[in-house]
Length: 87
Image 1 (tube, rainbow, N blue to C red):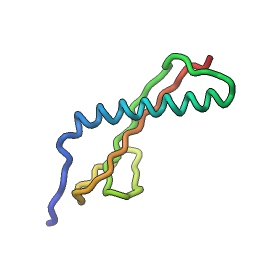
Image 2: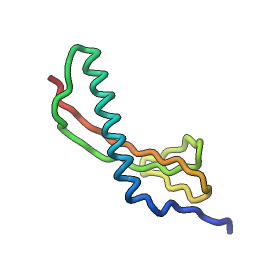
Image 3: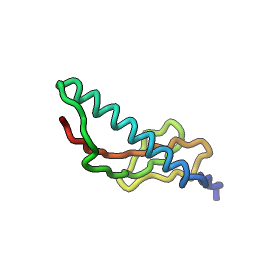
Image 4: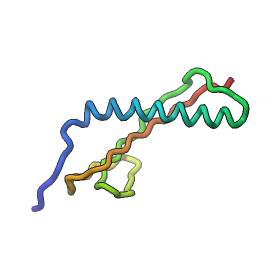
C-alpha cells in the first residue's frame, strides 16, 4: 500500500483562504458593477463552497470537494459565493 499524505493545518489555512477569496469576490463584483455604471452595496448573502485539495497542477474538481492523499505537493482552492446589493 502506498503512503498517504495529509495536510494537517487545514483549519487555520481554510480561514485565511476564505478571507482572500471573499476579498477577490468583492474586487470582481466592483469591476462588474463599474462596467455598468453602478456600485456595489452591502453584502446580501455569503456562502462557503467546498475546498478542493488536489495534486499540484491538477484540474480535478468535485461538487463535494476533493482531498488528495496521493501526493505531497498539493494545490488547495477555496470558493466563496457572495451576493452584493447594487446601488
